[in-house]
Length: 229
Image 1 (tube, rainbow, N blue to C red):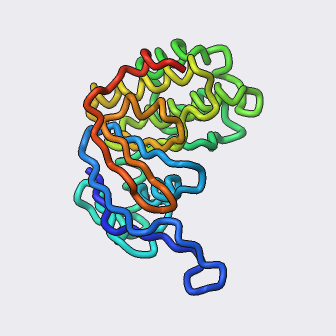
Image 2: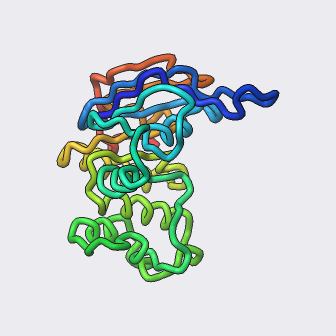
């Protein structure tokens, strides 16, 4: 589903303040995998996620998604790719300030029973017609996650999706991600510094100082609801 070959990302190349963030990373992520990329702050994992999803260019290397070379996409092709094939959940909520949570969740999509059910299960119904600045961080993050889920895409990129949530809410969100992976064969690429989340992943990739230091298959995947937070 996602194949990256010798990905390098260098900021300010050939200058005094040159910074190599990614140093030749290779990945081959299969369709339907729940893959966690873990690493300390500054390890390059967020930059890697942005490169794999086409949000950032690379200095060198090849990235293929569903056998398409996304680095050679035209602007029109890239916009279609982002609109139809992938969705994002960022650490920053990226909600539209003058839309309510409900409007932020659906945007151009029609309401669905599945999403409406999650609005109730996640206990944000009471805030659903408020604007983002009237809501807690947890309520905004849940809305941002639902906005991604409503697209029903094949690939979901997640940047610390539980960073602003308490233990109970974190397990609720991760449980839904697991269910979507299993029921829709959605490929999930999630970055985190939280070791707990690796327990629910099929695949765990560790990044350190811009390099991949391990790539392990998890043979004993736990259910998110059974995590001890």
